[in-house]
Every structure is written in C-alpha cells, then in structure tokens.
Image 1: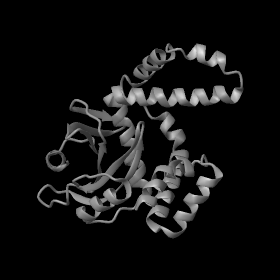
Image 2: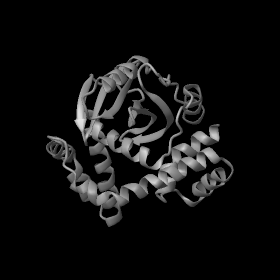
Image 3: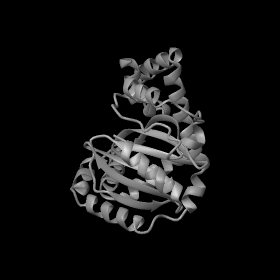
Length: 251
C-alpha cells in the first residue's frame, strides 16, 4: 500500500512527462502489476485529453462575476513581492520560464484560498471532468470507498452512503487535484444528475453558497476540513434534501 501512495503522489507529473527517467521507470513498473493504480493513471491521462478537447469551449464560457477582476488584483499584489529583483538575477531564459510557472501556480493557489468563487469554479470543472471520463458503478458501497481512500491515499473520511430517503446514490470515489494538493472526490447520482462531494484536508473557511459554471456549490467546515458539495444549479425540494443529507453525514 505504501507503494501505491508513493505512485499516487507522482501520477500527475508522470502523465505530464515531467518525472526523471529513474522515477518514471519506477512508476511504470508499479503500474504494470497494480491494476487500480494503472486505472488511476489512465483516468489522469483521460482528464488531460478532455481538457484539451474542450479548451476552446472553456475559453468561450463566461467567467463567474468578479472572478477576472479578483485574479488580476491578486496577480498585481503578488507581483510586488520582489519578483522584479529576482528575475533580474536570473539571466538564462529557462530560469525565467521556471519562475513564470512558479509564480502562476502561487497566484492561483493564493486566489483559491481567498476566493470562494474561484474554488467553486475549479471544483465544478473537476466535477464535470470526472463524470465525463470516469464511468461510475451504480450502488457503490460506502465502506469500500472509505477503505480505498484510506489505503491508497491515507484519507480517513466518512463517506455518506446511498440513501433512498434522501434520494441519492453513491457511485464511487477517487482522488482529484486542486491548487494546494490532492483531495478526495466522492461521486453521487441524484434525480438523474451528477453530484460531487470534495474535502480539502486541513483547510478551514467560512460557510458559503456559490454559483459557478452552471452549478451550485455549498461550502462548509467540519473537523478541521472544508467540504464542498457541487450540485445542479436548480431549485428543487429533492436537491435541497440531498444537500441537507450530505452536509449532515459528511465527516
């Protein structure tokens, strides 16, 4: 299981072709005899294929209100922190390129921590991506999902099970990435529509309800973790019942 955890931490740079030769060979050797990890790597590759395929459509989609101005303000704020002085010291073009990448990641991470709208937009994109490339099985067992999240990634999480009373069906769980690392993503079906529950480990933030990218996100904190529930952006008694059930049970 320790091998699976190490490979899980390197799947993203592996798929991106950014691992050194030795580490890449180690990952490939593990994937060759571990079907669950191999499936996870294939899903990561599929995610990138989906994003490339939908890049033009995503560019045309309207941004949530205020998102662009917030990002621009954060970028201006971050750029004042000695970046000009640092870049003058870095003569090689490759070094400047590396600094640009690092700065971009830091800005996005900072913006995500500060903006509920940006967090909701990012997790909604993950929600759509995962349901498109990952074919979930109806009626997944909550205990099995909890065991997989614990054994592969070290996450001790209570997964709200299928509930006929609430009208929600658990269909699977997986690992997703966000600005500051990785997080559990639990997938559901309710009223024929996809619902996602994310948990940001060790992160706390005030409760919020946000609309982004045609979906509604409910954000709350419990036990030192932040939960984000991504729901269809529509008013209905059923969806409200689903939201109450998941918020009550998730921990």
